[in-house]
Image (cartoon, rainbow over all chains, first blue to last red):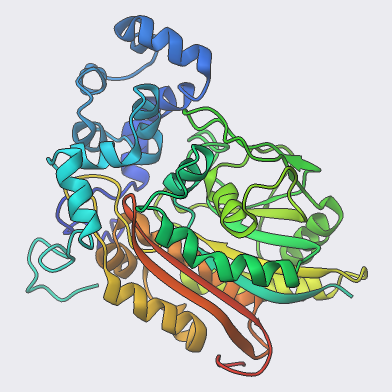
Length: 132
Length: 287
């Protein structure tokens, strides 16, 4: 019997569960290393060489180099870990969130000032399904 | 005897800390947020606790994926503000209360809540932003703090039911401590927000408003809400709100009066919610 996952039908959302954790262990631990200033400098000096020190998949390394955070999430990254990459680039959480939603930061910030993204139509890939 | 006299509930949005630290709190964007906490700061000056039992979550800061404790109690003398990648926040070192912390650990573990005991831990914005919101920018924090870090990063976090029950056990533990201490319990995180993926930016004011109502008047019912409802309705990262139930459990058993309630959208990606309850007749459903 497999574990029940009642949360896989949320559009544009990847829940960081234990399966994602196993996929993303090294990607996330690489991110943790960026909490040290000297590691941030080493990473910035030669990103590829720094990434090669970690047991990450080539896909994960490419996603980091491209700053494709949605792909990083798909490959097991968790946003709180991935935020260290944005911090290293001097980016805010809002910049990162905007980049993942396919908007410019200005467009995203405007949406937030106007009350944020509505839950209507965003609860489930099929809103006709019973919720929760 | 130590006693719990109040519960403080608040979001802990990192951008709020950054706004304060970078001197932007007077900007038009941030003014409504900080105005919303002015009554709280005034109240707190008049109701200063000896110790705050502060429920928060670590955001992949003290705990990487090497260790993911579900509930971890900080028993150290001090907790340093962490470097989360932008450099450490320029806020005072947090002073712990090892005697009360270890007393609570011993009590609740014997009450079947298997806490992880932590004697060395840096604290991130989850703990320091609520302190800044409530105390402003002092040279030293005016009281001691016992951190309780709850895992809400790796699914599944503890259930709302479990959080609420742990809060009750914490109350019992505090009340069995001999020294006469005034203790607040703070629950932090939320409200609705999603920080990742194409659905980033989700805000659900209606759901948040109902949550603020129920945490006061129907905490037992609210504690039954499953994780998936939080994630679906309040965004995947809105799951942090289960932590408010620890603080509500710790303030259950005696009538609670609503001192202050505040809600504002947005602070960066997030809906800011805030509530203060204190012992006294008024709202609330004592059990």
